[in-house]
Amino acid sequence: MEKAIKDIEKGEDMIRIELSEFKGNQYIGARIYYMDDKGDWKPTRKGLTLVPEVMVQVRDAINNALEELG
Image 1 (cartoon, one colour):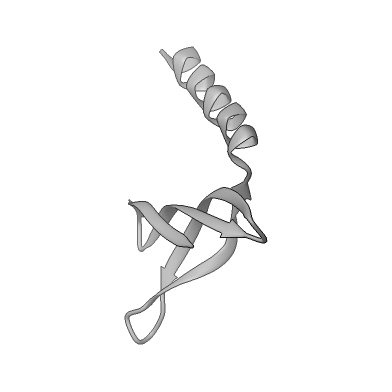
Image 2 (tube, one colour):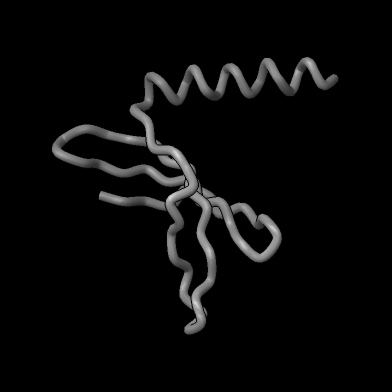
């Protein structure tokens, strides 16, 4: 199972948030994609894929950082 949740523009690239499953475990990923010469989006090695419990901690840390910025 792989399901794209949201594509976010980042200059010429994009960040894709997606759900996936591997060996019966569920994951949440955020990966940078680039457009190849044929116009297809391809994933880079830049990104992270974590189990939901860890991604919740990442989300909370990002929310804390945004609150610090005001």
